[in-house]
Length: 105
Image (cartoon, rainbow, N blue to C red):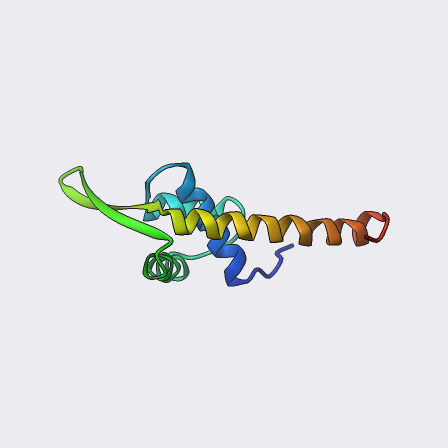
């Protein structure tokens, strides 16, 4: 079963992958695909938007005779990721209460 995910969650997943280390687009795609179905044609606009928003920065590095574009999270991207993770945790707790029962807060 696949759950529909919005752009906020996709952004957070991409930022989380980029926060681990500077990495290139194809690797980000593979890491994101390990948790959700996404095509490269979907992911590259997300990378460009996050870069435009100041959440990611890029640099090129030679690899096998060609340049590979790497993405690295910025302080603004780390802040956005932290905020989204806090909101995610709150949302997840609400869903867990519905799924598994528990006290209302």
